[in-house]
Image (cartoon, rainbow, N blue to C red):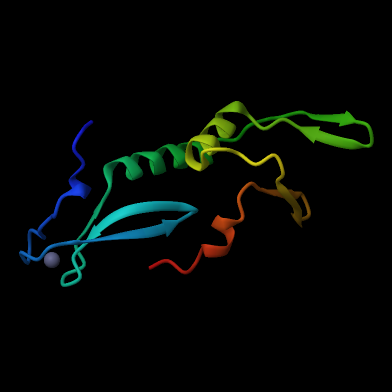
Length: 123
Ligand SMILES: [Zn+2]
């Protein structure tokens, strides 16, 4: 097992105070952060930073998927790349998702509502 700096006490380089472990939510991502309460220096956990970068890459990608008629409904396939990423983050993807008609020309799928509710009250 590799050692994790977040398991140790980290001293702020500017004020010699022990940094505190906090969690920050951004775009549905939790970041483990070490924070100095005195000067606001922050160290984001490198693993979380990397995962977030992977997310941004995926977010900027546009997939062309085909609509298929099944019975009276249309189905779309969600690309494997996205499903895998959600599963890694979320452990397991729910079979039920919420779908809403956000505006003309745009549908939204919600895989996990916990990220919807907590968004905005970041600390
Ligand atoms: Zn400090």
